[in-house]
Amino acid sequence: MDELEEARRRMDALRRSSSRRRSKRKSDDNDRVLIGTRIGEDHVNYVLMYNMLTGIRVSVSRCQAKPQRALVDEDFTAAHKLAFDITGNELTPSSKYDFKFKDYAPWVFRHLREDFHIDASDYLVSLTSKYILSELGSPGKSGSFFYFSQDYRFIIKTIHHGEHKFMRKILKDYFNHVKRNPHTLLCRFFGLHRVKLPHGRKIHFVVMGNVFPPNRDIHWTYDLKGSTLGRAISDEELENNPRATQKDLNWVKTNQKLELGPEKRHLFVEQIKRDVELLARLNIMDYSLLVGVHDVERGNKDNIRDNTLKVFQPETAKPLVRETSRRDKRESKVNALRKAVKVSDPKALGPTTLPSDSFSERRYCIFYADDGGLLATNELNEPSADLYYLGIIDILTPYNYVKKIEHYWKSLSQDKHAISAVNPTEYAQRFLSFMIHAIKVNHDVMAVLEKNSHHLHSD
Image (cartoon, rainbow, N blue to C red):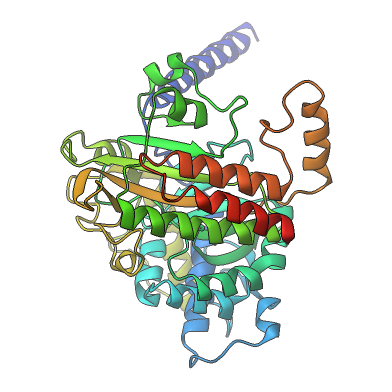
């Protein structure tokens, strides 16, 4: 009995030691710019990821196989259900796991992908050709997770049920805005889905375009809301991670400016004005302008992406021994895949793994036409030293009673106009004002503020 207790104590000690080593490795990883988390079969989100990608592949393929047609009102509220299991059926192929998948407004998102010049086959290959995408915890407070496609082109983001409902509510307005504004800076949505495991909770997620390019290191990143209260990361945090996402006060403190010549700044201000007018009309606030800065002279010599992103792909090339009945053959393949998954490690991206050029669809947007971004220009509209990657993100937060309570509570002790939670009209005006003042030379676009203020308040 004493020997048994001693053995148990030793096992507990080994577990604690292993746990400490894992914690230390995790702590070391936190110093990296992008954390590529291993998503093997023992990872908590492996099954979720597998089901997401399988559902996307089947649902998108089904929609794309049909002839193109014009949209009708019912398309915006449509929801198509699919059930997956190991045996498969006439609608879905066999799957490693039992799960249910829901595809929302598939025809609307097919049209959106085409409007954004996304080729259907490229979309599927990017998302489903490898099982594993780098997993990132959300930089915000939402608790969502990001998964990058293996080519860094798309992002899968889990969203809360409230965000899902709100997105369905505003989808028609968003779609019409994209139709009227092909150069919109708003986040580009390509799909809205839900996955449910047996006896598990329902997980909603969106597929979005990545603002940042696959072929350029991002040397500085900013998340700008136009709010100044508490909108900064500490010098200590920045020292530990020089490429951490900085905020409004960091931008102001270091006197950062967008260097845009007359032609580009007029286009930029006009488009951002149109975008925030839509957001204000839809009662949306708490969005940000994501700004990535690539120093052209510095180039890619730091190898930021190659050194930090990882993908995971099960090795399934080994031949299978048993080949009897069809069912046994399928189960044997599944078991071989599971075994391969367990012994495979994530593969660090080599210097040639990521695409060397920006994606072709970017050239159709004037703000992504300079090698996937917007090249800084001087007052003669001549090229300068920085390449900007810009996009308005987090556009699914309505000014509801929760935000109104937050506004009331914070305004008791803080400047009610400086806090993040303000009504959508004030938020839009403050956001636009901050972005115009963020431009190095802005005297000829300041008039937009006065006109926009009148337009927003008249609405």
